[in-house]
Each structure stands twice: as C-alpha cells, then as structure tokens.
Length: 345
Image (cartoon, rainbow, N blue to C red; front, side):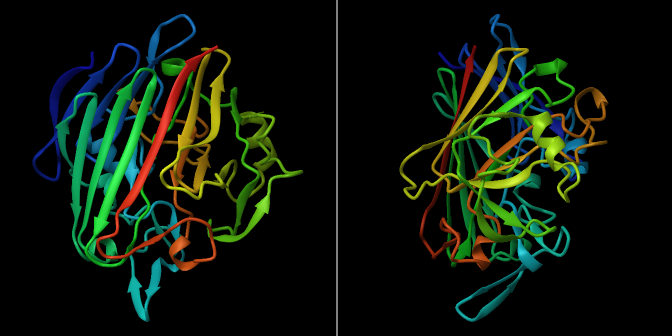
C-alpha cells in the first residue's frame, strides 16, 4: 500500500505557496515539491534495512530559488546546453535565454526548475503538470507537460509527456544529486560507477558537442566500473574538473527501456541501477557544487553527489546528425520514461 502524507506548505517568496507531499510504499519513499517538480528527499534502505535520504536538497523555497545547481528539479524546456542560445527552424531564427557561457542551459534562467507546477495524487505516486507559454525563455509554442513520479516496489519511475502547439525542441530530465551514503555522505569519492556505454560526446570547453568518441582507452571507460575518485583524479586538470560528460545509451526505440548503468556504495551497501528510453545520459559529479546551501543551512561541497540525467543530446536542435530526436512538430508527443531501481548488496 502506498501512503500519502501532505506536509506543511512553504511560502514562495515570489507569492503564493509551495505544496509538499510525502509518498511511501514501505520500501522506498520520496518527498515531492510543486516547485520545479523537485524531489526533495528520497529514502531507500541500506544493507541493514535502515532507510536514509540519498538525494541532496534544501530546507526552504528561498534556498531552492537562490541556488543554481538545479537540486532535484526537472530541467527544461531543453535540458543541457544549446549553443549560442540560438535555434533555426525552417528558415526562422529563434533567440533563447542566454544564461551560461553564451549558451542556453537547462531551459534558461527561469527554466522548469523554477516554475510552480500543479500537483495531484495517483494510486502509486503523484502527477505534476505545467503549461509553458509560447515564448517562455524564447522557446516557441505553448507547451503542456505531464510528470509522473511513481513508486513500484524498489523502483522509482519518472515519466514525462509533453506537447507543443508549435514546432519546438523538447528534452526534460530529472536532476537529482545522489549520495548513496545517506546523511553521512560528505563526498562521492567511494561511489562506484559502471556503464556498458561505448560512446560519449567530446565537447568544447563550453560543453557543446564536437564529435562522438569511443570510451576505449580513456578515463571515461566505465565498462569495468570506476570509483568517482579515480574518475575525478583523471579529469582534475580538464575544464570540467571532473566528470560532466554525455554518454550514449544506444536506445533508438522510445518505447523500450535500456539499461544504462549503476551507481553503488560499498559503505552502505546501496546500489542504484538506471533504465531509460532516452538516447543519452549526462553524468555530472557535482564538480562545482561548493557553497550551495543544502539542508539545515549547511553549505554543500563539490563532489558531494552524482547526477545521472537521461535526456536528448546537448545542442541536438542545432546538430541534427546527432542521435535522438530533439525537435517535435506541433501536436507531436514527447515521451521520457526512466526507472531507478534500488537494491542492496
């Protein structure tokens, strides 16, 4: 049985209030906010059966609105980077919000992470909905979004549908920072990351893709598993200061879920496996998280969490040769579904 518990609302400093709800199926539990579709907390058991929260979050709407890390939020209307904050479609130039190194990042400075979503109850989770108006952060078309968080045994399902009344690029992702050590986790260094992915995107110093490359012989080869410490050490002198790379899943069928990889922690015995229908997953090691205000007013540290962000490919709308589908015609449905499976060992 799934239990629902409404929590005291937060005051939104911009006006109104932020709804909060706790959903618990007896195995895992989440707290969801109407602000940004945020997963504020996610409780899973360790090898001893003790549940702890394994995602980073904040204690107030003000703290969420102040930080730039997209903690636990939905990134959109287009996740990741669009080069030059510009698009062109059928001869029409489109100017987007320029909010990061001359690019549009995660939908602009007032992206979906800062929107007030409508929230309602499902039998096994919650459904959030949002209307992004034509011209929102420069994106064309009135875009309607439906987001479901569902708890099924030891799985969290994230399913997103979206449709626009004008041709528009759409790519939405869940941007939680995972630390499988729970409340004691001050670093991700001992987390083991593995993935069968054979290809990743080489990018310029602004994170814009330049080519598809093989992982063979690089620090980015995760097929045998590597600790986050090993990866960070190997990338310490790069522009990203650690892992912030987009891996290809090989998924060409949006109806099927593909196994992408797993994150595990030997201290707690927790393991999280990710399955998705998206063509890529951005892995981000929280390399620039330092100073962000987290729970209890504490300042978070860089490398304190790991993001696994299923999505369409960065700058896909400007690079149609890349895998996936970035543009959706008027009335065409965008569909994202990912499954996060939590086990112990």
